[in-house]
Picture 1: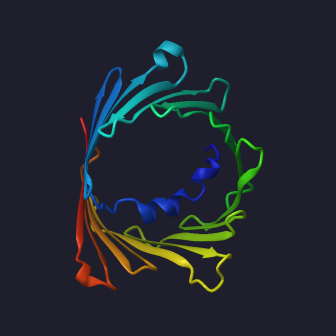
Picture 2: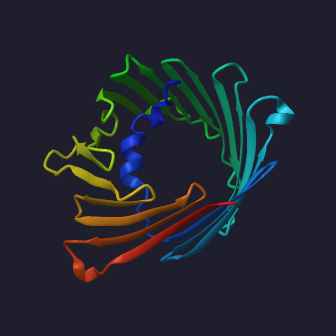
Length: 275
């Protein structure tokens, strides 16, 4: 298996904490056809409805490389396009993006064995580069640097991943410019129960309590699960997840603040279907 990119090093815990807690009402439908797919999304939020359509075309049989292109337009008038081509040379993936606001970028991702390297450039002359290296099955390290048109560093980050056992995931990240340290962990207690947490320590404000998130997932059966999380602001999210099959998934969320119950609760839902 190839090494993951730097931005994906902490993905196991980040996805566990952030995903599957709907706070709006969202429907996503994907229609697959022989030339690619079409994704339509409708999201009902407090501020109104946002809808988008994304046709995606598979160019693999035309270019001889695993490649595709997509175009997205939403009700806010934003138009985006993306083209990705894999294995121009073995292990290299190229991604080109552009939008109606005249933002353009090119990203090169290279993966081979224990190494993953990324170079990203934007037409505003900002750039980002990163490297992730798996020392062994237990330890992985990564560094990332971001700069701007004035050739000055905006951010320098470093991350260490520790997997002492297959059921335990630990990450430690240092955001040097922001003077923040992020700790996260994910523990699979049993096939039915998992727990996760993350903590952010702001070194610029030593008198300030660290911010944190903590969550848990309980698998009721092969199709349904219950997730819950809370954070340092006393916000609680509870969701019920149901997968009718691999092509139809539902989520229902209840969100409230235990320190201010008078503020009331909010409810959310998401529905994903593939045709």
